[in-house]
Amino acid sequence: MKTVITELLGIEYPVIQGGMAWVGTAELAAAVSEAGGLGIIGAGGAPASWVEDQIHKVKEKTDKPFGVNLMLLNPEADAIADLLIKEGVKVVTTGAGNPEKYMEVWKKAGVRVIPVVASTALAKRMEKAGADAVIAEGTESGGHIGETTTMALVPQVVDAVNIPVIAAGGIADEFNAYKGRGMAAAFMLGAKAIQMGTIFVASKESIVSDAYKNKVIKARDIDTKVTGRTTGHPVRCLRNQQTREYLKLEQEGASFEELEKLTLGGLRKAVVDGDVIHGSVMAGQIAGLVKDSRSCKEIIEGICQEMKEIILTQAEKIGR
Image 1 (tube, one colour):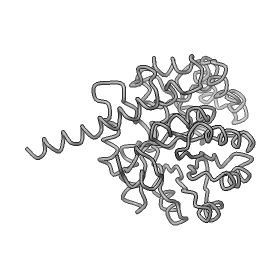
Image 2 (tube, one colour):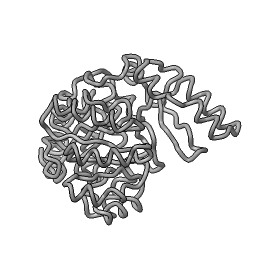
Image 3 (tube, helix red, strand yellow):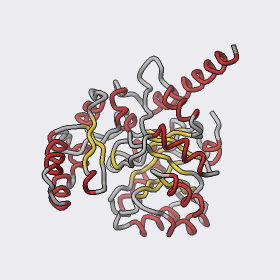
Image 4 (tube, helix red, strand yellow):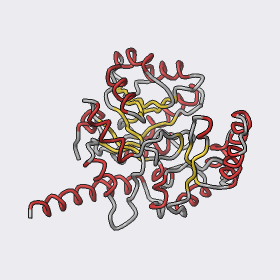
């Protein structure tokens, strides 16, 4: 299944795994890459030494292309940016900031740079800075989010830039009779690939706790909440005691420090410790369509095959 993105990145399917902190480990990244997509190591706030170890582990598990997501607020961002060149990582996605300071050295080293954007303004700026593509991520996504929906954001970004656009946010419906429709919709909006996160959280190769996976699988359409809007750092999670306490404190006008204290280490609690009551169970609104746990290969091949069939079927109907 070839698109400009598969050609650019040397992958079989136009599917990228979201760069999720604590979730995007070597195990998941390697499995996604082996299945023909692009696996991503989520650096999050981890030290450069951890990222280096994960890169080595992925290389041991697969010889296929993979990437690293660099959260630009990471205290060791400079060291990780250099590490990617040293280790010959071919793709970097970025979030939580502007990667322009690294763009020149990355490009000289042959690294494909794909920033995550939540607005057309940032997309145009990234194109001007030399980005190879952009990931237009809608507010439906899990974790840190923007405010514009995928349906509205993707076509506007497509129209605003000349580089390929990857759609993210609200794409995961592989577990039903219409698997592939979300991907088909993204392509109809002009995207050349998709990025998925929530569906891979629940995959068999994901190392997240069973409690986390089960909470995603059991989620309904109304089960996500956004915290942190008052701080300017909105985060989408599945609702639990932590989100209820956070939203209550926000309504009462709590300080940023109070709110930050409540969520400190929350994602690790959920992913590693299995504490889905007090931890941050980050997931997108599409969690309501994730009904069981499947392998990355089953997810990627299923959604891509069905997407092609949907598009061909619709083309035939229009032709008639």
